[in-house]
Image 1 (tube, rainbow, N blue to C red):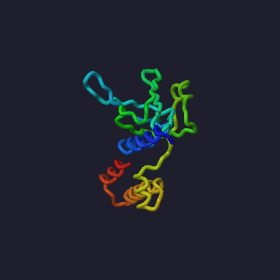
Image 2: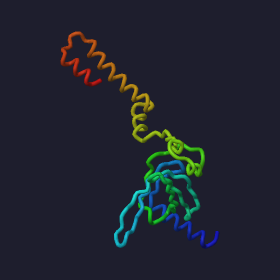
Image 3: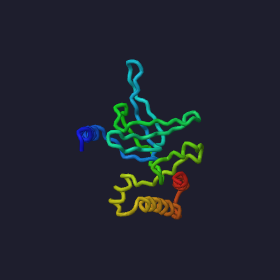
Image 4: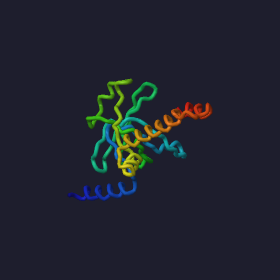
Amino acid sequence: MNILEKFEKGHLKELQSDNKLPKFSSGDTIKVHLKVKEGEKERIQVFEGVCISKKNAGLNSSFTVRKISYGEGIERILPLFSPQINKIEVVKVGSVRRSKLYYLRKRSGKSARIAEKNVATPIDKELEKKNNNSPKQSNLNKVSDDNKATKDIVNDANISLEEKEKVDEKK
């Protein structure tokens, strides 16, 4: 390992400790908050699009984001550890089978859409731990409990009209 590689490794560790970047890959829809300097003023501009490629090359890592603006495709290649990037947000996680999505350049409209990957959220995991059920099962239990309560009220013969109207409003 030569001197340059050692320097790059040390600098890379320093950058990674300072800047918490989310894990994203190609196919994900991301928002990149960029620092834009106009004259003496500095503001943050959001560039939202699909990440079509990611190049992992240590300090020289970069990613490409593509968006459609007024019917025209715009791609931006951004260095991952650029001081120009304020933060990166992952909006949707895409379900793709390729690492480079250059075929999206030729597509437009519905054919350029990427399916969203089904990922369990932390809230669902907490519910699962509490109930020892899957998140879908716990939601089904809630719905069935609500239905039982309304059926019990409707089946009761001694109910006034006001209470029946309340049950209808709940539905």
